[in-house]
Amino acid sequence: MANLYSKIHRLKAQGWTWDEFLHQISLIYPPGIDEKPSTGFTVSHTAKPPDISARFWSSFMTSVSLPFPASAEALIGLYNRQFNNPRHPDLAAEQQALSIYLHEARQYGPLLYRARLYWLSGNIQLDQLGVFRKNGKLRQLKTAQQQGIEFYQQSLSLLEEAQQNTEIQADIDAFTFYKLRQNMLACYLNALTPETRSESSKLLEYLEACDFICSTKQVLAAEPFQWLPARNGLRFSSLTHNAEDCRWFYEAMCIANKAFTDLHYSPENTPSVASSIEFRWAIENVL
Amino acid sequence: MSPVRLFIAFIISLLLISCAVDYQQEPAPERQTQQQQGKPAASSIEQESREAVQDAAEPALKRAPADDDDDMLRLD
Image (cartoon, rainbow over all chains, first blue to last red; front, side, top):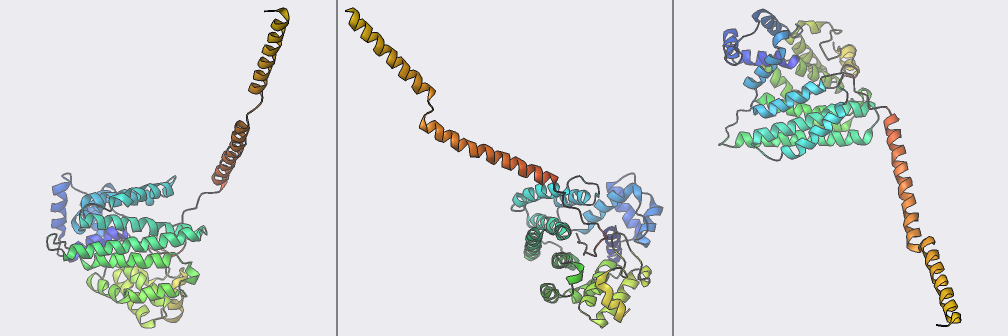
């Protein structure tokens, strides 16, 4: 639920007040929501999201904070619910079926719609990397990595085209572009075993080419509550043995959430810094 | 027709009938070829079936546990 937490804070940073949240929610959800657990969730990302409205919250935040058509967002939501179900009987079959559909669907429609479908196609490839890697399926791993990067790149190109098109007047913020580039970087990283990540020349070349460290610092300057980019910044600073950046991103993590002062703190779906091999250099030399 | 001619005609008829029956019982060379071609096709199907069974027996790709390796989470 880190994304939902971040989305709420992004809107708050844009000037949204709590009353405004409630007003907008009441326009599309007349029964309203339970205010108390919802406000608690906005204070800490570790708090349990309001159960009766977690799904509603997620779709609401998406509808007000993303530039993409609702139909494309619905498809992404549908896939994410399948992917996040640990008891799904055959996720690979779902991914294959959706990929076949997207192969046709992403060729037609408005630019932003197509861009989002390419994004989803990239997500499907990225999500399979860990599975192929752990099962020793090297050929499929390489293919999924290449396709994932290509799909994200195509999405990026379409977004740039939409932004330059005066008829569309798409309002695409810098964080949307950042997210796509970080997903491309993830395609490089996740295809490697954790032990080899500090030695991969391809990964380190792309890391420098995409200017990830600098753009992550810009994101954090605008949105200091984003602990996930801060953690990734620390990860890559540790992999590249950059002590100064390690300190910068560790402080950013602690600003986003004080709980990170304990290196054994483990947020949902994320291992602790202390238990991850990629942070070893930073722990031994900086932190 | 004299009895001798009648007898000869009878013998010739028997021979013709015998030849026709033999022709039907003996498999034609073309048919033999078709049958030979059919045999590998059948064994190919058997082989495919065996492969399908082997595929089914092979354990499905295990899903990567979310917190096993420290992979980067995607952003939507």
